[in-house]
Image 1: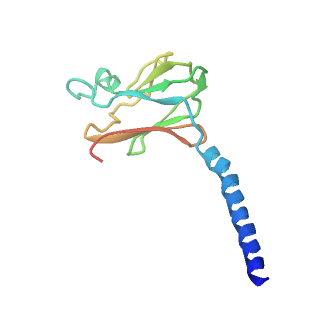
Image 2: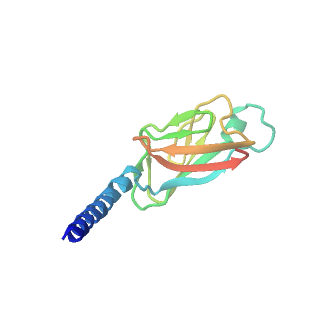
Image 3: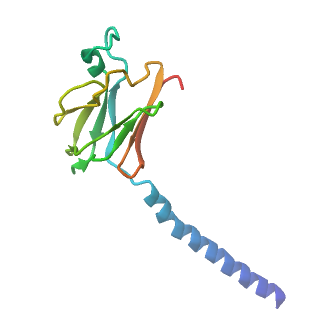
Length: 148
């Protein structure tokens, strides 16, 4: 009788643990939403001499690509490097299956190109990491190059 009681108790506990694990799965998945937005090509070392000119600064860029069909609002999204330089997207909407280049220097934003309006380089040629976060701070994409 005592052994049967222990068996039943263990069975109830095992069932409860299994249900708790299954119930926890959707919560964990909701913490990191999947986004169709990712990085495309990155030009971290502008061609030619790094002379600090706007031409040279704007030849340093990161491509953000929407692989999905629907448009995505990038309002409040941030693009950062390892040294915590941050660019925050304003009221920019990225069309479906489209890309935008985020240039380092100064310029006028258009549908395909936006500018960080910086007067110095951001991306480290020897090694760096680009991180894209949505307006809730979730990491959407990262891309690294060179030495860590």
